[in-house]
Length: 535
Image (tube, rainbow, N blue to C red):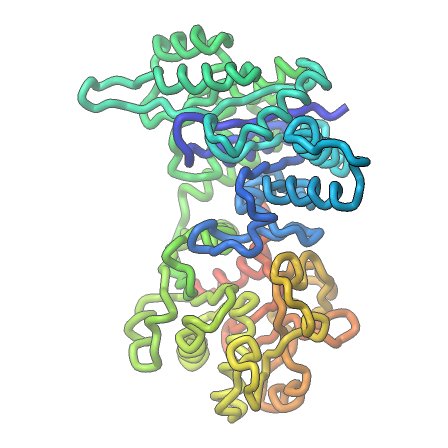
């Protein structure tokens, strides 16, 4: 039977519930347990797919094509498990499913209510997450903060699960803030006490309190929180702010999080200090903290005002640095400001340029000039999704002589749209969840940069796009020198291009950043960083 861990948050948002949940998952996996993760979000959108990157950050795509919350990226990077469509549920999808079922007569004329119908829908989703993953432990994070009205159905659902599965199979972790007041020079426990009181008021008694604190917690304050939260002292776990994100599992292990969880759930596997997996993670963190060299990479996109819009790309760049014993310094470049005249000034001192995905016409001409500058100056260039399409447009204009080359996304009636709408997307009106989503195979050409990076002929990578390379222009672009280095197995869809005359000038239609892990850097990011270092 799957054991359930539910993670809630109190006092304020942004305390790192997701990192806490992901770190616990990594620690349990080190102990030999199969772990899966979920995120339940209270907003009314069906999924994050149509939400603004400026507001919500990136959309993380799972192997089976679900558009999910960015926290799932943290889960996959930490636990190194592919999650699925039962890993992210919103209030919007919950109500959507229930109301559609009601319209279809699924409730046989009964009055549809929050309890039991909405809560049952949430419970069934959690149970399906356990069933489809066959996890020993399923960690479910509840988005939002205790006290938010939107979260109440989710909290009621997990309360009911704890009754159905029993206390030996369910555990509640509450992540709170212990603020420091400089005037009195002390940490204050009262916000945590009030947050726990509110949680207990709805019938949930937290088993473990994880306290985010920027100063070391004293035994006195730990004892006070334990007493007023009705938990043992060793179930009050200090969550310190770390310089390195991936040090969080080690810190939480030192502070006893996994020990407390395993004791209360009856999980017997020990995690000794000489555990092979623990040592390997510690060694990885040590390499991260002590790089031997530095490289500066520009992320040139349209959503750079919110760095979380490119969260997985930034992390994958860091991972590529780890593979090369190098620290990656990220320079954020708004492509709306890039012109042919100022590109040299904007990218001065940059050792590599990455153009990420995105939608819409804004900033596109700046991306084209960015790509041109990289190609003409032999600066390593990595184009992802839209970034690949930009590299094709730029090559068509400036090498193949197609001066009006463009994308159907930006000029629907353009004469030379070297990028155009995928055939199966032609008649789709609804925007949500209708793109080419999830993992698809890609056949790699011999002798290419991709082949040297991956070391294999056939790969699987995740996608999120509507537009693609227009096959009408294959011959003319190849004759001009562009290499098509990755295609669908049947050869019909162009998945990757490169300019072999440059050190690293690669564009891929897929999103390799979603499969990069700190202890398993993605080979394309590792190769890109290697090229930026001059190796």
